[in-house]
Image (cartoon, rainbow, N blue to C red; front, side, top):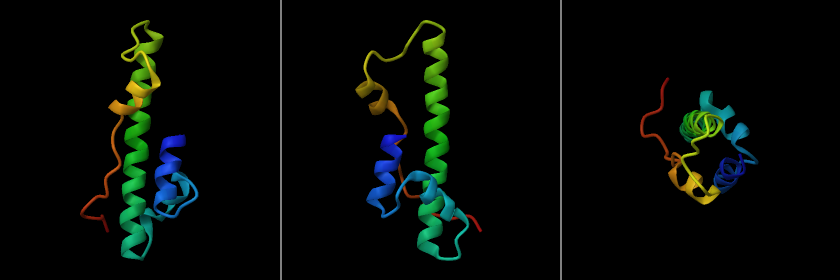
Length: 83
């Protein structure tokens, strides 16, 4: 969560939730950023849940937080925004 919020602050938002809330904006830039953050936030949590499943099963895929973060999906601005 901290990493996502920090990335959102790089774009001028206070946290990823706020950034994601612009996904349906009428402004093209806000919409692009909002949809990008929304997509990234979802992919991060899908990734985190997958890792959690491995941890609970007794086979953690990483031994450090740094490794976990390095393997996490990276933020990318999407090229085409959906209408």
